[in-house]
Length: 227
Image (cartoon, rainbow, N blue to C red):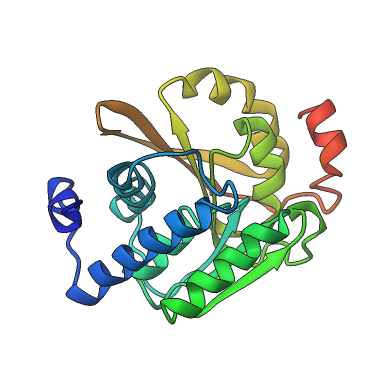
């Protein structure tokens, strides 16, 4: 049996008994649903804790989170939004995913854990709350230049887009320079960390100017001709 508390302690993540119980319930429900639908790649319970829960919570080390509005793009099985919500109940979380079964899963998790969360089924480029969020997150969704166009239009000026990336992030950063300039983003910081000897980074992009209203374009255009 996985000793969840020891895994969190290993990464210096401090949880209340209720928060630990919520993560244990989250892992159990995720494994049950994964037997019926592919929410995540097959993996051990311990990997769920390390590679999804702990990884999601790394954002807590670079930002002071409390009652901000957070939009998670392509949320999938809820990462990083739901682990962050478990840790900070005051966060006002919206998750967007284009796959209905994932939205059903996220709504089920929120209900089971009694988390106040807004789930939206659809493509992010169809979302209408432009420049309405303090923080926008994306994890394992697309290359950074594509993510900049999909995410920065929804960040308030003065807010942040946080991208979770792997060790080969520098090439994506170089390819994103034009998109950042055009969309009003500026690299604020890069936080490096390691999960199970796998190098990871959080790319913190500050929204310094309004994004032209025509962005984001339709996803087919974004993918075919990235900025």
